[in-house]
Image (cartoon, rainbow, N blue to C red; front, side):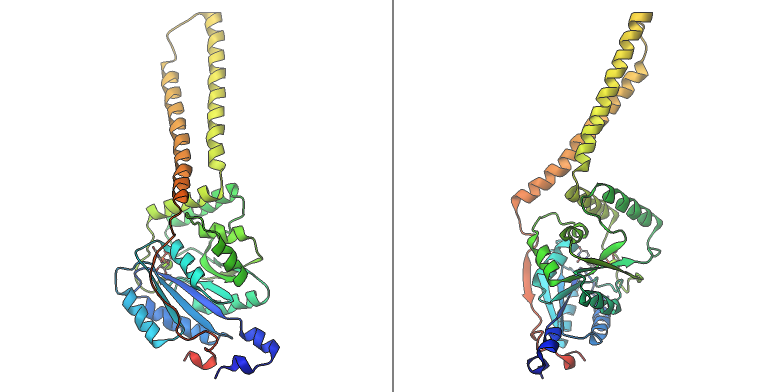
Length: 336
Ligand code: UDP
Ligand code: MG
């Protein structure tokens, strides 16, 4: 029975707080059944109603079939599918737009983010948090190289970004309805979600969790992709590199001027001699390099500007089958 209709106003307000869990999935056929089982078990303990929105980011394996099976067995499951792989950030964006809950949790499908933590996230939300970030307690499962480069990345981006971007906070996160609505209003094409979450500026809370091993399958990130991601983060949250180019140029020009001056004085005092060939080469190479670098930085921004001006959609939905039971009907008995 739908207990929402009968309950007293106060309790009703509480009960109408429903949760959406958004899961971006890309080629996760092995991980999905186990993931859904654990998620459903974790959510059974949670008060209120929920839906899961799986966003299939153009998987090429049996993921779509697995999702359909999950949906057939659980009315709280919604399945969206992209026309092709648009990337995790696009998948999360789509999920946030499709989610109807009063609170929305973003979680990975590979069980690296423990669904059991959702309960404490909801608690923080009930206490007034708009954004609940989950911080990895350690990154020891990752390679030495990834750890060091991630550390460097956060140091660098926080030095240049206008908004502080919390380190070691992945995409495991809860957002309140108004935070989701705010995010949905940002429709820039190059989406650096970590930055966007911080940008909205609502009340943030950070909880710690232990990152788990991937249950099955392999990571979908390659170092090349991570590099692009880092670059995206920096260029969409700061124009410092542009300034860097002009400062470097200025310093070089000043150096060259002083050098020329000293050269002039030297020539006047001691006369001319054919010397300084190494200095010449070094200067040419240095200046050439700096110029290329400055052009490259300009190019990075220009490229993003180009992409933004085309105003293409972030993703294309091939298909969306929302959770069939309305969340309000999904009461305690809904999720055995
Ligand atoms: N993912 C996605 N689109 C992609 C790559 C990954 O939707 O292009 C999903 C993936 O299925 C998983 C989550 O994003 O649910 C995190 O991916 P992964 O575990 O490969 O990343 P890592 O944990 O290594 O950062
Ligand atoms: Mg993972």
